[in-house]
Image (cartoon, rainbow, N blue to C red; front, side):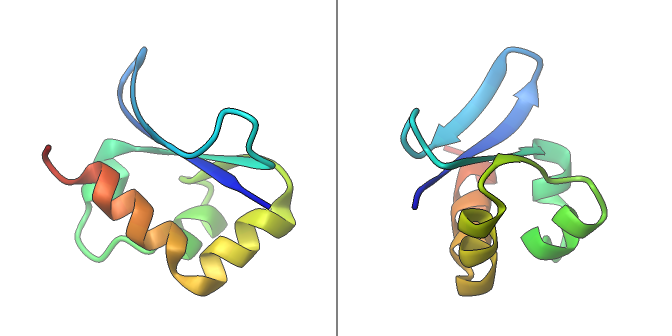
Length: 78
């Protein structure tokens, strides 16, 4: 199972990682991702990280820490 991550900088400007045909898509605002101590699991539970598709695929990524690593990489300056 695969997950596509989207960090939204502004409307129509997203930093994307993952396949277009992913089983799940996780979207988080850049401001949230750059907040100190960002935790994708907490962001999801608070409704700040939005997800569509397979929750099983997303939960696997949250559990393994892959979601945190990918979102932090996308949120860091290029």
